[in-house]
Image 1 (cartoon, chains in turn yellow, blue):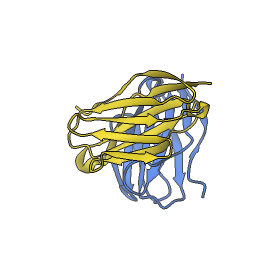
Image 2 (image 1 turned 30 degrees about the vertical axis):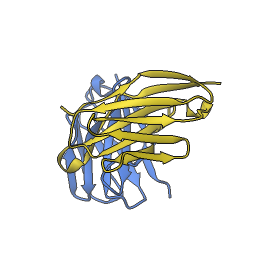
Image 3 (image 1 turned 90 degrees about the vertical axis):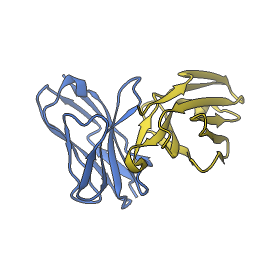
Amino acid sequence: GENVEQHPSTLSVQEGDSAVIKCTYSDSASNYFPWYKQELGKRPQLIIDIRSNVGEKKDQRIAVTLNKTAKHFSLHITETQPEDSAVYFCAASIGEGNNRLAFGKGNQVVVIP
Amino acid sequence: NAGVTQTPKFQVLKTGQSMTLQCAQDMNHEYMSWYRQDPGMGLRLIHYSVGAGITDQGEVPNGYNVSRSTTEDFPLRLLSAAPSQTSVYFCASSTAGLPQYFGPGTRLTVT
C-alpha cells in the first residue's frame, strides 16, 4: 500500500522547547518528502522538504531528517514560538515516476506561551 | 503575482446539482492538482495535470471531471453533487511535478 502515518496526532510544547513529529511511509520507491504547515482556516504551506539522497536538511529553526532504511522521516522545530501552533502534514512521493504525493493525516502542534 | 487563486470561496449546493470550481495560477507552472481535505483525513488527490492537454486521476476521482486547456487554468467539475462531496477543496501548482503552492481553498457544502 501507499500509506503515510504521523505520530503523535497532537503535541503540546512549552514555548522555547523543541517539537518533533515523526512520519513513517510504506513505499520503498518514495524519494521526495515534504512537510506542510496549515494554520486554522488557511491553506497548506510548504515549509521544508528533503530528497532521498540527503539525510538531513535545515532551514533556520526547522529541520527534517530522513532514515530510508527504517522508512521514516521527522520534522524538528527548535525554540518553538506561539506562531508555530498549527497542523503539520508530512507527505511522501508515490506512483510511477514519483509524480504524486501521499499525505499523512496531520499533527496538531500547540505551543503554550 | 497573484499566485494560485480559487473561486468561489464558499458554495452550498443541493444534491444532484453540478458546478465548476475554478483554479488559476500566474506562475507559468506546468503541474497543477486538486485535493480535497476532510477532518482527520489529510489531503487526498482528486485529479492532476502535468501540462496543458494532459490530465490524470488521483486517489479519489469519482464524481469529478477536470480539463486543462491552458497552462493557467485547471477547473474542477462536480457532475452531480452528493453529500459525500462536502469538503474543502484545494488547488495546487508547481514547476517540478509535486504541489508547492496551494490556493486559498473552496469550502463546499452539499445538502
